[in-house]
Length: 183
Image (cartoon, rainbow, N blue to C red; front, side, top):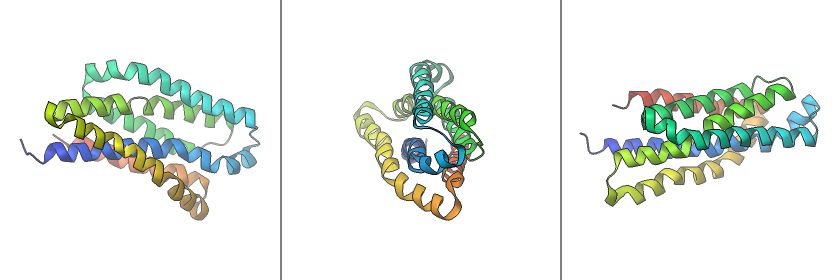
């Protein structure tokens, strides 16, 4: 086996956890525009956040078992694919209910990220490198959180709030396409 391949896989997991934290933050930066456009109240916005967390909680608890059954490659790939498509769907919504449904799907997809990341690291790295690899993998989340505000503001300012969801969603779809090519 190529000794560089595990490090490429780790880089991909780093990117996945980064996209995970980036994608979940976009709404909080564009909600004022969405509230104005769709007449969404603060209570409805609270509900939208709650349905994301419900989806996330459901899948976070179930994903570990699913990833054990189907494997880290399939599990993480499906997770990133689901939340990336859900993120793109945010750009197509036209009302409160569609936004809530998109957030729920985003939560379902994102719930599998960290169990998938942990299993991938476990599959690709031995005990002596596993802590370092986990630190790098989960470190992507911090980078995603840092990148989210300027990227979202830039995209929303120049392309509109819908593209602030679609562009990161398409990055996730591209991630999946690369991920499936890994042997």
